[in-house]
Amino acid sequence: MLVDTHSHIYEPEFDADREQVIARCEEHDVRMLMLPAIDAESYERMFDLVRQRPDMMRPMMGLHPTSVNDNTHWREDLALVREYLTTPPVGIDRFWGVGEIGLDFYWSDEFRAEQTEAFEQQIEWALESNLPIAVHTRNAWDEMCEVAERFVGRGLRGVFHAFSSDVECYRRLKACGDFCFGIGGVVTFKKSALAAVVAEMELEDLVIETDAPYLTPVPHRGERNESSYVRFVCAKIAEIKGVDSAEVERVTTENAKRLFGL
Image 1 (spheres, rainbow, N blue to C red):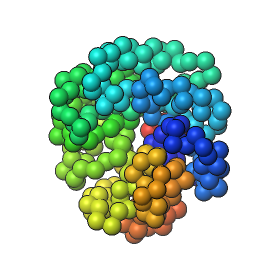
Image 2: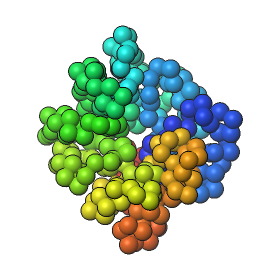
Image 3: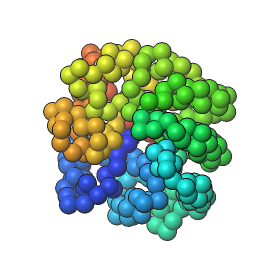
């Protein structure tokens, strides 16, 4: 089986055909989807999907870094994350990680302090709850390394979602705890620098993901992404590593199971 370790299939982009999208997952042996949260505007959509398909959907809880930007109520939103982690809503047995959390300075670096505070607070809650973190990073890899290094030795674990930095950053983050690195559709792009980085990474450090509906892999680039397309990421990693796709499937699935306690 394949595990999509990062999918937003609960978002409105799938409202018209979500059941068919899920059916295509099952057709291609994508048997489990990890659902990272975004913010209070989308939590209920995620909860509803988990209630409908508890056999397949594994929710996480967190506040996305860009949802901190220009948000005068971000601390109240953060308190809601804490509330849900402490007492999951009706019909949700548990959360499987704290995420999607992190740092994103792509749109603006005006909210560095606020994003960092929210990120570190949610890391603390993950440690208290013995949960992995699902980490978003954009235009902030150096800062991400600095934060991760502050938590060395405390048992922090998780996934650096949509990893897009270099080999040096990979090694630096790997030294910070029990971390895997989420590889998605970008690795399939013709001029992607990520392919050369993946060639230097250990397969035992990788999990695969789609970030659906975003970052669609070749041969569907330019279209809406969906979780069944994680198979194209698997195939590309196999090509880069010179191994059979079944081996990448086996190892990345075991990595996901171990990390998230599936």
